[in-house]
View 1 (cartoon, rainbow, N blue to C red):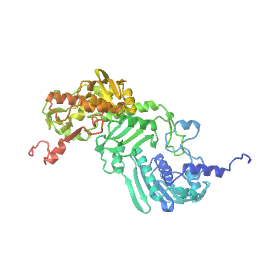
View 2 (view 1 turned 90 degrees about the vertical axis):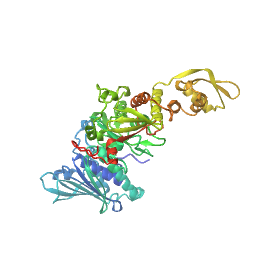
View 3 (view 1 turned 90 degrees about the horizontal axis):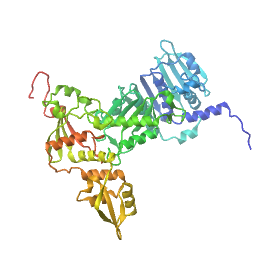
View 4 (view 1 turned 180 degrees about the vertical axis):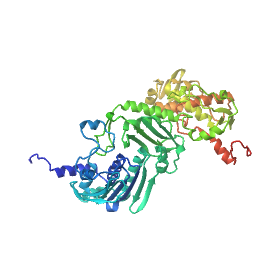
Amino acid sequence: MPKIATLPAEVVHAIAAGEVIDSLAAVVRELAENALDAGASRIAISVNPQHWFVSVADNGCGMSRDDLQQAASPHSTSKIHDFNDLHQITSLGFRGEALHSLAQLAQLSIYSRQGDDPGWQACYTRQGHIKTLTPTAIAPGTIVEVHQVFHHWPQRRDALPNPPQQLRGIQLMLQNLALCHPQVCWQVRKGDKPWFSLTPGPSPRDILPQLLRGVTREDVYYSRNSSLELLLGRPDRCHRGRADWLKFAVNGRVVNLPDLEHTLLSALSRSLPRNRYPLCFLHLRVPPEQLDWNRHPAKSEIYLQNTEHWQTQLREAIDRALALGSLDNSGHSRVRQLLRVQDSPGDYRINPSSTDPSTDPSSRPLMPLRAIGQANRTYIVAEHPDGLWLVEQHIAHERVIYEQLCQDWALQELDPPIILSGLSPQQLENLDQIGITVDPFGDGLWALRQAPIPLAQRDDCADALQELSQGNLQEAQVATACRSAIRNGTLLTLKEMQQLLDRWQQTRNPHTCPHGRPIYLPLDESSLGRYFRRSWVIGKSHGI
């Protein structure tokens, strides 16, 4: 048997380098994160997969001559100094491995200038030592050039995806960084040609329309406090066919948080159409002592304390986002100032004691929404200070009943019981799971002795129970709500319409029915004015 021996330092560093830098996207990631740590507000990136070349330039704080001499040495960093600093990580990079790994795997050159000091160009050996260090003319900041990545690792080159796939990985990684750092301007070139650029903004809500074609600011909700930032696609208009836009970030970096992903999907499970997924970007600001980044070389996996606390915070943020009036009309404040509603506030049932929606729907103030009529015995026409709303009565009522059933699923005894035939073992199991007692009643016959309260007195109760036997509890609640809701074609009085509007507003998700269909259509006064070619001028009248 061979004897155990200590590996040479160059082998140790080569292994570590291969873990840190595993693709061209990893090269860009490490250099872009260094630029962000340097306080850059503008980052220019150039990539050329055919020549295995990456360049990242920033306008950050730059490095001095002494820093350049040490920068590519193994485990060299300015971001931590002792063991205690590992529990107070506030930067994106801190391991001191990126530049040394790049020197191991490629030809590394750095141009940098700090403040009013002269600029320097440094070229490095594979061991991270200075090969040449010469003065150079450069604006304050840093430019890192990486040539011939994996030149000494041909197996790694051959195993990597083709250039288009590598470019896609780079693009996705930069999009994630842009969402986490919306104040930064990104300019990216592919070879000698411009590829894409991202204009900075005050929040990720300004970045998202630049990343997804057809998505506007009005298609998403945005909320932020000191510890949590949430960007959520409106469930009635913005969702995805794949779960490719469930992004979770912690302290400036997108990471995998499966517990929070499950919480998000659970909270929106009956808000989206079938086989559709939400669009979400959640950014947590976590105290550094509650985090441990030393789980994965790419820092995509972390140890996060108090996961239950963050799950609760996410649920409450989703409830606030989905409340009517919370963010729906954020873009119409100017119109709201111009419009004067003739009716008294009492007609709109405003609760003046509260203006900030609570996570408890029943305590939220009702929007100034007043029923004024019914169209085709299907849509409630409601007046709002910003225009008119059309609310489909059946699915609005369905949403009300569904959330009541989720909160209090109650059964009523049937006397006499309902007899069904031909129930399969799976149907019998489903009925048992939703609490309905089933007894044999002869050859192939079964006696059902309970039914959900809304269905117990209906003439079609037998058909309803047959339907309920086809699914689980949640599907049974949806089916019960659908059968119990007001049917389209039913004539309602103004009082009944107003009562339904008030109850619907207090649901947790008033935007869609349990099947994911949109419940209401807002017709803004500004849109109506444009359609009818009206011009609003303060102090004047032009055909108003």
